[in-house]
Length: 120
Image (cartoon, rainbow, N blue to C red):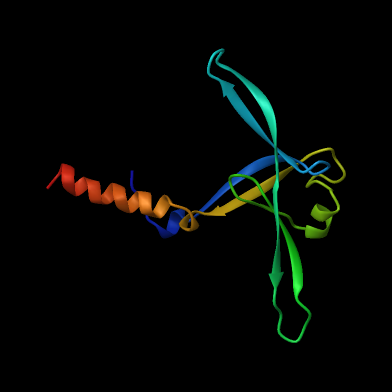
């Protein structure tokens, strides 16, 4: 299908995250048994430096999964290892990715150009 570009530039997921050891959950299907099991993966971490006019630069820790970066209402709590639900072992976080920054735009353009080949 085709989706209007502007309306579909940001994708959201809810991720289960354990901040105590910096992991996020995936359910993986075993092809041999058709059973799913849980696997925990390391969060990706990077520090972004925000240059500010008339102020010292601000270092911001960005935590992300393979789908996008974690959003937190209170980034300090995130850094301190507190989940979205308080001091729980894990929390659920909104994860966001700007789709225009990956290859989805090129795939859409490629799909559109292939329509010309099928229906001249």
